[in-house]
Length: 159
Image (cartoon, rainbow, N blue to C red; front, side):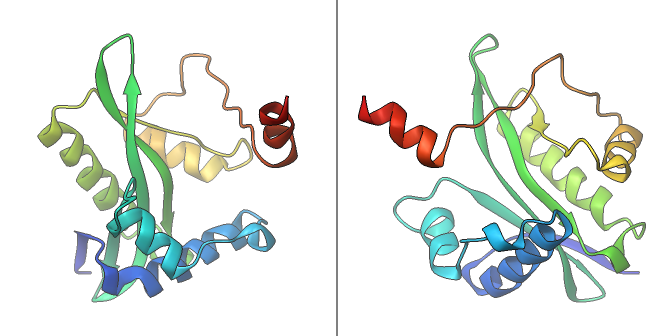
C-alpha cells in the first residue's frame, strides 16, 4: 500500500473537515462540531493562523489528518508540538498510515528543534493507548487535562 503524508493546503480543507467530522462521530460528539472550511482556513492559512495540519493518504485517497500547534514548556523554555487531533479512518488502521503521520510529526519536532510532542487520549480509547505506547509514548507525568469554556468562561470574565 502506498502511503503519503503531506502538509495540508487550502485545497485539502474539504477532506480535512470530512475527516474531522468522522472523528467527532467516533467520539460521540458530532453534534458539537462547529468547524467549517472557512474557520479552518482562517486559523490555518489566514492572518490569524495558529494551527497546522497534515493529511495522510493511502493509495491516493485521504484517510487521515493531524491538527497541531506549538505549546510552550516554560521549565524547558522550548516549544512542544501539541497534537490536538490524529484521526485515521477505520479501514486504514493497521496499514501504517498512523505510524507515518506520527513519524512526520516527530520529524517536524526534530527539524524545529522543539522539546517533544504532547497530546491527550480519551480515557476509554484503549486502542489509541496501545497504538501510542507501541511507538514508545508514555502516559503523561500526572497532568490531567482541564478546560474552561462556554458559560463558566463567560462568568469568569464577567466578574
